[in-house]
Image (cartoon, rainbow, N blue to C red; front, side, top):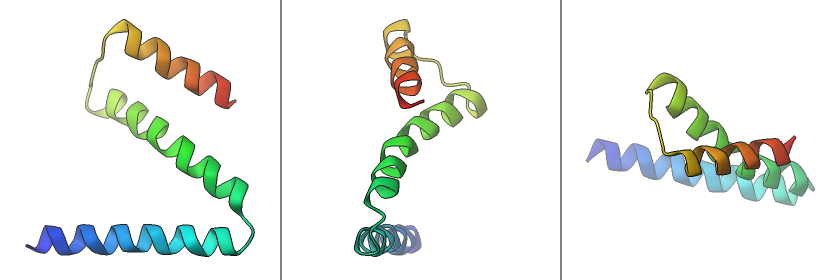
Length: 69
């Protein structure tokens, strides 16, 4: 039950920060953050948890990362 409470607080804070950023005219920075966050999460999973995916998955991830730069 505690994990559900913590999770709901984190999601609420995430949306609150998102709404605040958009209302403060930081739309581009906010959208880039929401685009880059999953890429960083996948990269950290590959590095720290040694999560390996197939070659097609790795190629698509690298294309997203390269196009972002």
